Image (cartoon, rainbow, N blue to C red):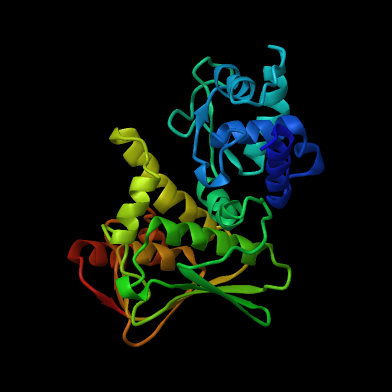
Length: 307
């Protein structure tokens, strides 16, 4: 693939993410490519969260990974102030999530792509076709339906009681983003296919193990922290802060990580057979979801809570 084609793809992604025209230029596109670790001949399916400093990270990547663009040393201030600062404000990039107090001009400072899940999920179908059109993706782990002004995101792994695989989480993130950006949608409903809403984190289905082998997180404590935060906290916070009203339609089991899904929605509507169990949560909202004494009772007893 030509360098110009890959840059054009990155510009299309910035445009689709709602960045203003001034942030869709070549230097912004190259910065995005560096943050996602995508070289000229890499598929967008290989995009990953990369922590990079400006000079030794982003600028070196742009120069070395077949883009062959060598910016002058003082360009680092342009990237820092005019590109990265705006991407941080737009919620596309995090500044040093592991060391938030690090000065911006520190040699150790770096940037980390924030939208790894959403970005990856929304372009995976297009990348397999060797293009980068960010239309509605071909969802498999969730069902996405529109009924008049209502969008429905339906967890679609009934065989595993809708356990939260990485692919399911990525597709959920994308579906929520699509519904949030659709001016015709007024409310978003989250539900589960089959007999249960959600049984929590996927701890080892064949599908999840295969995906972990294909797209591993870094080894060690930092990689485990990154996996836990990216998969089970960052996205839940995004869903909590969607612009439109959200409703969790709960039936059957809503346990462990399933509780996080429901808790991130504005309203929870439960059937008579719904069973809740809040435990082992990265998104810990229980003391804010109910009176403190009731929250203590639920957490101390660790028993099913009926509708």
